[in-house]
Length: 171
Image (tube, rainbow, N blue to C red; front, side, top):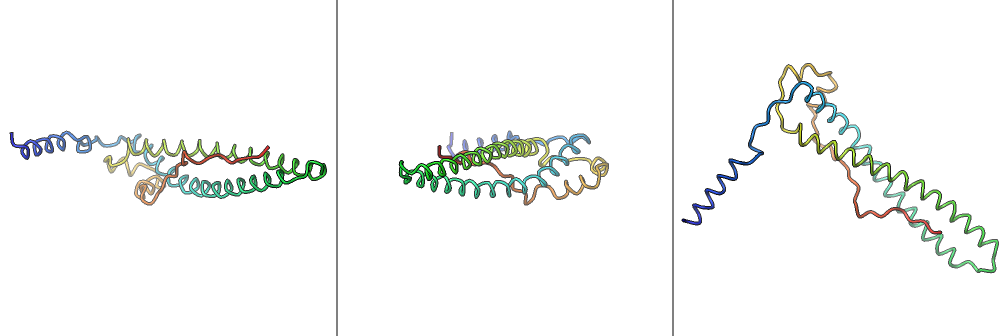
């Protein structure tokens, strides 16, 4: 069989069997309401979480710089200088406490980012590019109608880079 003909047949077969071409049924009224709620949540929470993530990245860098400074200071203290030794240990203890509190906030941010990413994936899987009935749309509250009209254009859902290390503290 001609190779070109075989490739053409395979292309047609793959295209016709593509699940993307299969028409999904229209969203029910309840599904549409859930999708509209998801859009509202994503439009509200994604920018806030993006700002928080950027702020936390800056704070993490500052904490790590301070950790390095304190480590250098500790390493340069004369073991005979008990007063300076005690002062640096107190600063290290305070820094460690702040670092642990910051890492707890990072853990909460991770949970929030996981939740918003799961919500976005659910929206993509169950709502995106699905038709709905006009009367179901008109039955939505006006704020949800506005959310559906706006969609997710321009919404960037943040994620946490798995390679980002936690903040360091020096004992």
